[in-house]
Image (cartoon, rainbow, N blue to C red; front, side, top):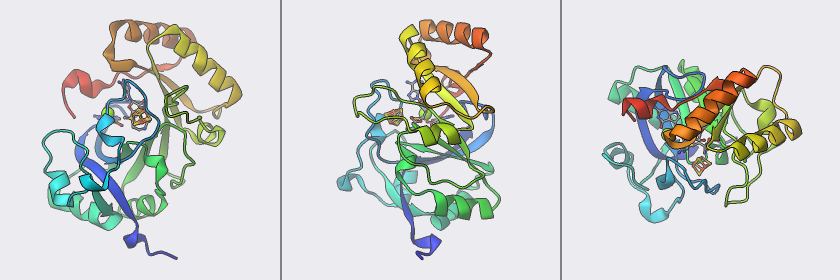
Length: 229
Ligand SMILES: C[S@@+](CC[C@H](N)C(=O)[O-])C[C@H]1O[C@@H](n2cnc3c(N)ncnc32)[C@H](O)[C@@H]1O
Ligand SMILES: Nc1nc2[nH]cc(C(=O)O)c2c(=O)[nH]1
Ligand code: SF4
Ligand SMILES: [Mg+2]
């Protein structure tokens, strides 16, 4: 068995802020953004995390010192992540693992180590890779349908989802979501939320209207309205 401390993760950013999306909106949280995503959403907020190039590998110190988004990433173990939390004086107890596509990595050792130290985990994922997360991890699946990378949303990810947070801009996106919910149903208790793409007014109006009709939730990327990370 590989000791937990030797598993390393490619970290693009690690910062403390307020969760701006989904059910945990408003919760103080640490964001661990992992490098690498092949899905290719044209409107992705984090295109700087798509490529994991060896040339962009830096020390953890250099990664933490970034002042603007960049492709630079650092390899870190769970223990190193815990040490950074202490060194930076981070106080949040909720840790959001995002990316990039974090489900490309085995998050079980990371989750176990962080949970042992009293943290609650959440993963933000597109649902296109098998999930390796602890039982207590809050799973947010943000389904990506017909994206350039050609990846499919997995039925097992939809079943594991505690919330499905779907990005919308047009009526046809709602139709695609309906088909997904029919073909790959989530659990009965899974929360469904619509998230307007890039705060576009028409997207927000559509999302509000459909949420009211269906009794779904609206997720508006609060951090963008607040101008925070
Ligand atoms: C950047 S992604 C990273 C995690 C994972 N790859 C995923 O897509 O869920 C984090 C969240 O931001 C959402 N997102 C990305 N770009 C967005 C945009 N321009 N407008 C609204 N939501 C966006 C995604 O759908 C996802 O819920
Ligand atoms: N404040 C804040 N909330 C977020 N919720 C999900 C985010 C993400 O990029 O995954 C995100 C983010 O980047 N910032
Ligand atoms: S799956 Fe997530 S990280 Fe990847 S391109 Fe889409 S929104 Fe961006
Ligand atoms: Mg974001």
